[in-house]
Image (cartoon, rainbow, N blue to C red; front, side, top):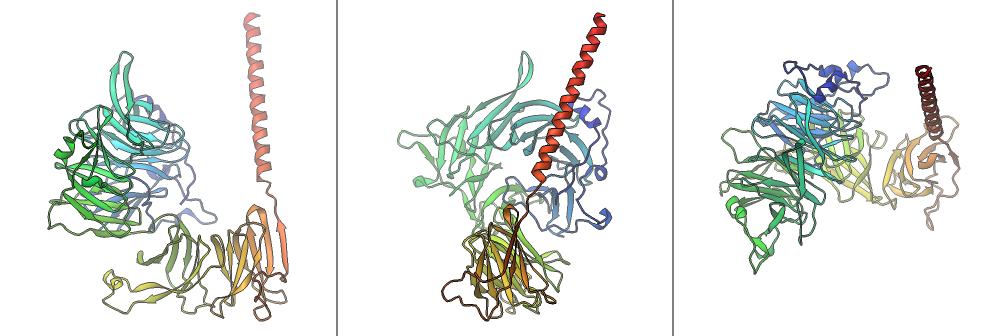
Amino acid sequence: MSGSKTKLDGDAAEGQEGLEDETHEPSYDYEELKSKPQVVNVPDAHLELHYSFGYECQRRSNLAVLEEDVIAFAAGNVLQMLNLKTKEQRYLRTLGGGGIGAFAVHPKRTHFAVGEKGEDPLLAVYTYPDLTLHRLLKGGTEQAYSHLDFSPGEGELLASVGGNPDYMLTVWDWHKESIVLRSKAFSQDIYRVSFSPENPGQLTTSGTGHIRFWKMANTFTGLKLQGFLGKFGRTELTDISAYVELPDGKVLSGTEWGNFLLWDGGFIKVEISKKARKLCHHGTVEALHLDEGELISAGVDGFVRVWDFETIDSADITEDNPTFEMEPLAEIKVGHDVNLKTLSQAAIPDSPTLWYAQDAAGAIWMIDVIVSHMRKSPEKVMSYLSGEVVGLACSPVALAAASIAQNGSVALYDLPSCQLLCQSHFSSGGSALLWAPLSVDPRACTVFTGYTDGVLRVLQLEKDTDVSSPLHKKGSEWRFTLKHACKPHGKAISTIAVEPKGAIMATGGMDCTVFFLNIKSGYEPVGFVKTPAPVTGLQWSPGTGKRPLCLLVCCEEGFMMEIEAPPMESLDVSKSFVLDGLNVTTRKFSSVKDKLRAEEAAERRRVERERRRKEREEAKERRRRELG
């Protein structure tokens, strides 16, 4: 959901320089300051977010625990708080209307901070559980926050890092809405920032091809942030998504290839692998945590492994082996095709070994990391689509909706109960979806889906009457069944349309063609018409009166075509599927947007030149009077 920017009261900006009166308590009205949805001809009171099926499961650090059974994550420009027991959701829209760059929960779980995206994004601190807007921090970055972290213990400080173009590291006294220290952290993306849990005044940042160690140092010019980059030496340069600081000041980090690096004094002391040179994880290590004398790691390979802290802390190389080899205490395979991004310890009393895991494949898991044969199996507590949703359609007869995602997942939702009923996954990426009209299927159980490889699939919704099937065990009786598949395009299918009587289907592709299929003959291919540019939209005419049935085709670069519907009986496609004999009208529309923008920019420059000229003349006149 996109929203318009909200103009905030400028009084808060004064707090960035420090509050002279420490007894002054800023007050903000969240309902007044939050961004509003952009709607046309619909009163704001009639448009309300009822339920969200979204979860940005592929982004880093997008899962946090607020209290027992309540987790938080970002989806678009909304921070969602989900009760895993009751499935109740609460929402916070961003203040500026853009997306959420990062968020962090206070160590006491009494507050949380939300760093936004957009021009001069805000960093807002809310109280929990009442969700009151408590503090507003400004000036931390230019375009987007990428990670946040409260200092351990009482959480008096808040660290933030920004993204492109400034990559600024800022340490805040968030109670006073003031900046304590700031410095450019790096010249490329920064994935994470954290305070040292054992050494006050020390921080660590990591990201693209680097890890950096920081110290808040007193110098002759005052308190400053001093940072030095970790030296990889002979070790291959790697992006670092995860690290954990050990009690003695060493830092253990992950790598892109799956092993660990133990850092000491800014240098790599040793690389750690499993025995026989096997990798600790197959692929990037995305999470590292130290808990009760054990190190917990998770990676894109879908495994969680538990390691002995003492062995890692004392690891060193030998003359015979430049890599330190060890085996994990426990190894947990979370599931098939699981891609773990984040681990967050659950706040469940008497269950310190339970962790929630963010799965980039579209799920949230509960994992028991206890080193015991009595360990509970991983449990999927929530399911979502993974990646961008590229197609959405509602049922013509029921309160249900179907969607297709960029990763090839097709899902069915029951809107009144806000439940995901069933989901199917295909190897190629999704690109288009259409719920078949009643003229094609009077039962409204057919869904047409298009994919990035040019394949069209016809899916049928069916009830599973086998009570022993996994669908029944999960509380759903529905499933998608593949009824037909063909490949009408050489590139992605961008749009699908069915003529009003349900006899002809047209598909538009990024390969600059429109393909026609005969639905009544079992989706038999009819032929295609070439277009001057990739197709972006299709719309059939009503086909009433004397006007023949036509297809309106919208293309990139301003082209629009009107194609007469092909006759199903008299076509000869034995030699070629190219339809040359159809009546086709092509028009090109030229946009005046660029011209108007250029004129507006020229006018702004003219006004600015005029303003400066007047200022110079006024300055000259003042000097004449002073000399006069």
